[in-house]
Length: 136
Image 1: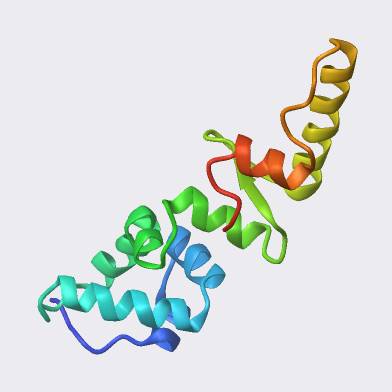
Image 2: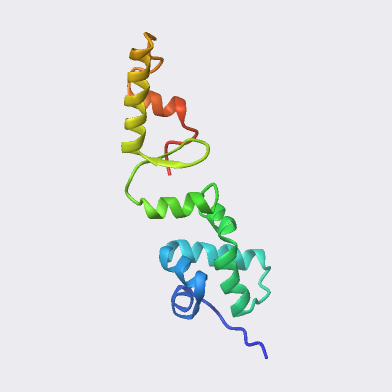
């Protein structure tokens, strides 16, 4: 037997299980409200089961990450993990501002060691030139 009813943020937080519960715990109420609104819009108002809703939050995080304005799920969860920090993306991985500054220092040292003129004057210019994305 399937029973369908309205699900809101509080319902999600108390009735999700496994990986979905972990993911939902990391999202803000505002993010969850946005996801629920867009999910309902995608489903054309057709009801989905609790299991389908749970599976969506557990396995389709790329979808709702994009809905929230992130490149993908990795981008979303990295931003959550490093909330308040400035992060940079080098095309493969995310690095913190401290790591980016360290890479710039290594770049300058390599230039000096090889007798080459540095292409970048400061680390911000380096970051803009070397990373695909300097905001999360």
